[in-house]
Image 1 (tube, helix red, strand yellow):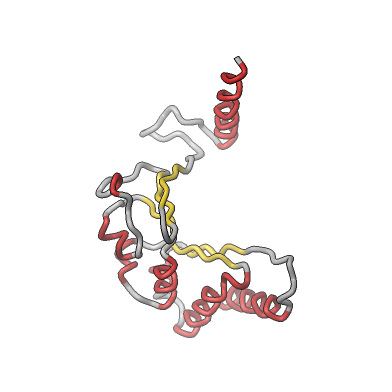
Image 2: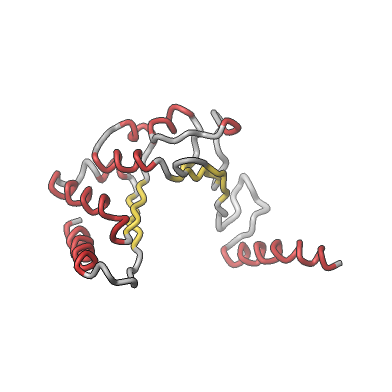
Length: 169
């Protein structure tokens, strides 16, 4: 963790010195199982990570956290930043209480329903939309899906050309 924090801090410092630079490469920091990470690194490393996440929008760093809903009721400084932003991607449960812990509001049509695989609610500060993420392979639940990513690409392309072909006829 220390080398990653060192690199992110050095990058932020470089960008702060050269604030006129229009060429900022964007970095996405994905933290899966945040509930485990926050208990496994030192308090000093958590403080450094918090500062990096807080400066993220100014340094072209986007941070994505994944954690169970039950953990969102906690209140470390990083979670408070995310809850204050009131944006995110909500997967699986549409329990209103779970979402409320994250500061999000589940659309009424989805309350209490379990979302199927790949379906999510994308939240912003003022609205939300339901989206479907494609799975790259067929499952027992949905055997008719394309078998691999190449077949998915072909299926998406042919679906996109069908409306144009129908309009030309």
